[in-house]
Image (cartoon, rainbow, N blue to C red; front, side, top):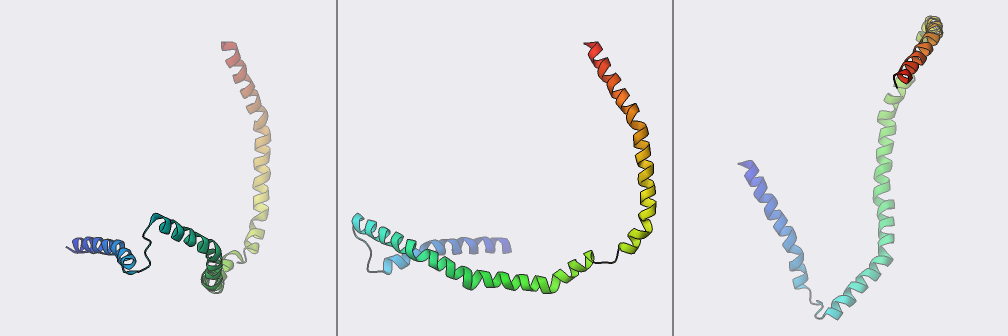
Length: 136
């Protein structure tokens, strides 16, 4: 039931939004009567738009958009940034220092194993390559 009401409300608002501008133009007395008048009105609108729109956009940016973004950045910097920053500034160096000798030892073991396996892998790859060539 409520979806039907919402659907009808959206349709009514859409129709109203489409019709209201036409009522506005119907009430104005300076409507162009000939195609030349329409062309002159369009050219005048473009000229005014080219001159004033950059200034309007610049004013909107400086007076409305930029202050909002600055306030959001200030709030983020004051409220959220310290929490994120504290995650990265925790004292983890003692833990790293405790594990450093163990890590180095494991690294040396892995390095020796890789050096021992490398010639075997190289030979087996070469042998496989030769077998593929012999098949052809």
